[in-house]
Image (cartoon, chains in turn green, red):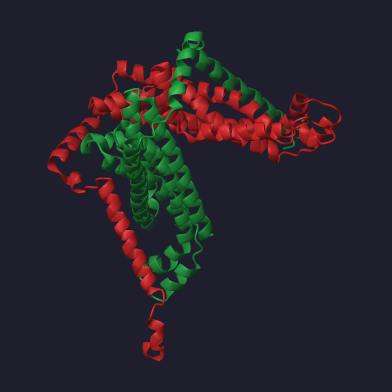
Length: 256
Length: 281
């Protein structure tokens, strides 16, 4: 990135913009550290170092008993099902949205502005604890994301095939099914797989508020300070995320 | 186009059985997953649930706006921003040295000519550090926050550290990629002249990359603001903690006010980040 020589007015104003921005950033940083009660002297003390070391040492001994692993496997399946079903639901809703066109941009923005975790805790109020609320929370947030991506994918399609079908008397539904949908499908599938990768991460932590899956196990065992069990759950989460990433990568490459 | 003219075999789909099998299997998988997630659309129309939901929804309007609550919201919003900012700065301080160590261009042993006693050592250090960065960013920040809340207690320190840990993994990876993609000629020239690793970095590599580093870090700061709201749910302070408490107390008006403020904050952070990044475009 080459900078222009500071002779013309544009470069001078660009430089003053940088000075102002740097000033804003630095004062923001200073104000943040100053205002937060970080108890840094307490955190950096020898006592807290010893406590952290004990904590870490316990975490390094995952609980690998067969009975517990069985429970973790159940929670893993539940997490996988939550993310997959949530993504599928969102894909279906996203398609409906994309069929409706422009009007749908603002509601999609609201759906995706609210994080999955907030949706989950709101839904828990009505539906009670469990993976169902988590699945719906994922579906709502993801509908906001996929709805927008699908809308954009459809808006950017070349119009030729749709024109041709309309001109030969096809109904709007037929034009959608035989021209626009097949045109957009590879891109839609790739977006959906990408969100699935995202949702497996989200599903793994949604349980923290009581929405089932691995997160619920994690917060339960951490609550009881059973660090070995918590550490197993974290390890399994990492493996699950890596496996889903790999699977999605293979699928996406096959799509082109 | 009369259908009678076509040979009958063309109506037969050679992939038909395979497709049918695929459809049946997918359907079975969906049903199984619905069972696993206790999927129950009836719960959505259950009168008792609907009464709770309607009661809660009725409370959403009007959003709470008395002076005391507004002041508290303002305070917690700032705390959310401060947690994100402090976390991002710490992450940057951790990620920069890690990225410098990982970058191959700066490796003295890779220059050749100079015989090193343990040629495998630098490479092992670099791979180890890469693995560490992967580990730091693979564990979700919410999980780090859960652990840290147990380790260092409730409060903003847990949130700051959770963001610092996760984001140092992300920033370290991207910084290293930026360094690797820069023109290595100036750095290599400096190293060949006898400059040290630090000099080579400061005078050869950093001047080329600083704009991109700042721009990416500011973008990550914007993401950190969103994360820091979510971290509040596990007790790391800020807006998220307030949202969680209000939902638990069924205080609908507070919830809607907080969500409005959250959306406003995200929009503002987005605009600020875009403005700042334009300065280093």
